[in-house]
Every structure is written in structure tokens, then in C-alpha cells.
Length: 273
Image 1 (cartoon, helix red, strand yellow):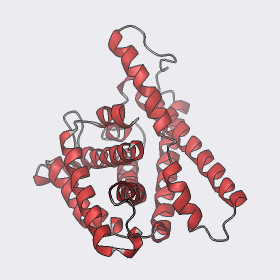
Image 2 (image 1 turned 120 degrees about the horizontal axis):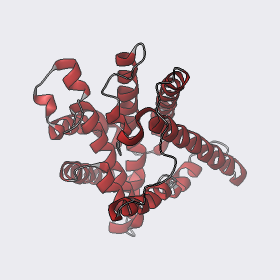
Image 3 (image 1 turned 45 degrees about the vertical axis):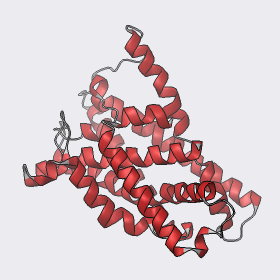
Image 4 (image 1 turned 135 degrees about the horizontal axis):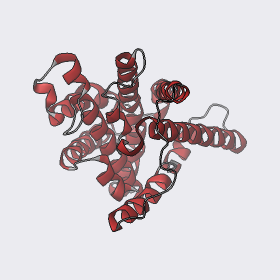
């Protein structure tokens, strides 16, 4: 049940981010607004629905995790691009003296600030929850051995640490006290450097593509776990195409409605963490 709550919550967060970045929010302009002006694409629910139907569903119906190897690799590459661009922007602004000295410690000035600080702990632990994919990956690892799987785990954890750390540092240096829970929404304004608009689009669109590609990997483990819980004792999911498609459809519908009812990723992380 914990895996189901975690996986479903993470997927809801992904959809919320896609909607906020592409269609905008109350305080930030979306990519579609900047490209096309005001229109139907301002509706987050509609944008998310189109993304789910046209892009996510075809990837989520794949039955083997090895089928997602290329998309997973591409998602990692896009995440690295995001980090590199954000770090380069922060570096140039730091060199040019355009970055104010950020607050280096937590704010204990109010009860709300303390509660928000406590929420950070489950979010941080949530960032490294990946054990539910270990067995499927091991089963489909070429020339699998425990030693090889350990190397995969260590490399993956190291990459995550680097990506998370540099994302947090560069984002906080760039936006300081105005850093949003979804830092991507901060990239809707002039960054004060050359090619600011182009870099903004690269960061936001690139990371949305990253989320689209990593979404089916998390969905795979969610579907497997739900199947094991509900259809315990039944034939493996690989042997029942109808059951696999049915579970995929139901899960995507529930995740979609969850993303439309939860206002922001901060709220979602409070539960999934």
C-alpha cells in the first residue's frame, strides 16, 4: 500500500508540473501562453488530459520494463541538460554580481515556517524511494549478478545526488526567497542574461519531456504492485493483456483526476513523502 501511495502520488505530481509549466498558474505564465497567447491551452485540466492520452498512455501500455530502456535513458539525459543549463545561468549571474546573498539557514520565525521545514524531511526521503523497481530491473539486466546490480544502484544513487544537489543550489541562487515549490515555474521571466528566453524554454520544455519519459517507468511499478495486491494468485500480468490494459486505463484515469483536484505539488508531497 505504501508503494501504491508513493507511486501514485509521484505520478500526480508529474502531471501537476506538466500542467503548471505548459498552461501556467495563478502567479506564473505558461509556455503555451508565451508561444500562442491566451486560449484553450490555459486550462490545466485540458492540457494534462491531452498529454495523458497522446503521450503517456502509449508508453504506459508497454508490458516490459526493458521496453522503456531508451525512454529512461533519454529522460536522464534531459534531466542532466536541465541541471547543466540551470548551473550555467547561475554561474554567469554569480560572476556578474547579479545574485543577492541568499538566506543560509531555515526560518524559525513562525509556526507555519517550522511546519514547512518538517515537510521537507519526507520530501527528501521520497527522492530516493526506488526499491520497487529493483527486482524488475534485476530480472531484465543483461548478464545479471548481485555485484552488477549493486554497481547499478550505486551509480544511480550518485547521479540522483548530483542532479538534486545542483538543481537545488542553482535554483536557490537564481530565485532566492521567490523560489517556488516547483522551480520550473520560476523560469517564466527574464533571467537578466543573454538568450534568456531561449534558455527558459530549454529548461522548461526539456524537463517536461523528461517527466513524460520517466512517467511510464514509475507507472510500471505502480501497475505491478496494484496487480499483485488485487489479483493475488492470478497468472502473471505479462500473460494477461486485457488485465494489463484495464489496470493501465484505470490507473491513468485516477491519476489524472488526482492531478486536477490537488492544487499544487507541495500538497501532494506532504502525503506521498
